[in-house]
Length: 357
Image: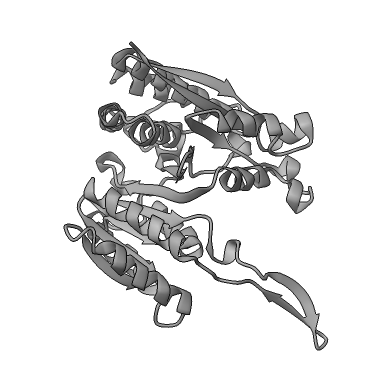
């Protein structure tokens, strides 16, 4: 009997529909090979939803998400909607999904692929062999802390935010970090600013407490400024990096830049019940509709979905291997193309990956 997984598909704006369609082509092969069925339900989000309904996250889309096992997302945004009020812009739909579904953890892997080493801004000797995962807490910190605001005090403008974490928020993200490390290379680097911030001091204490249940996993603590430096100096030394919302926002982008192309970087945002899978790049409206966008980040996001939500780790690994083989065989979209390789479009790249599955 086939396993059935309900997948909410939110293509969004710009190149979103193209890269999502290409990814579903790959998932069709997985469906046949592993005797599973993906039941897709499409929803509007971002600018496409604004144009249709006036809301970047319509209630119908949210309902589809809540009735699904996982959400596969493309991208949102574009100049067309840049002048809208902040609370009506396409990106607000994405933020509301995270909040409504209580997605507390963002997983962003960064892996250096052998055929693309020359695309990295770092020397080959530094980047070769890099395979790390940044785990960012998504629901706390200065982005959500209260009080927050802007006002005038003594005739001078003042802006303020509150950096705050509750114990349960730190405990659950730390537990996830150790669980993920056990499936990788058994090392966690917890990143904070405990020498200055009280909230980081508490963060470090709780991570240590959780570590007592994972003595088989190596734990190191690192200040965020030092981590930012070491990611450039010795990125191969990192396995799982766990950190708070604002530090994670910065560190995950830095880690992603190591590999040289945003078009290669997947991500997952997960909670107790729901999981949301998306490429980390934007909607790239300047190339939308041209069939040249790199679908690999979205395809690898689907691989994360197969591993985390569908519990099909072999299928996930098969996709990763197919991507590696496609690159080894010299196929490239325009963003990663170099002399001597074969330039292909969005759907041709997906087809090459599907063939190798």
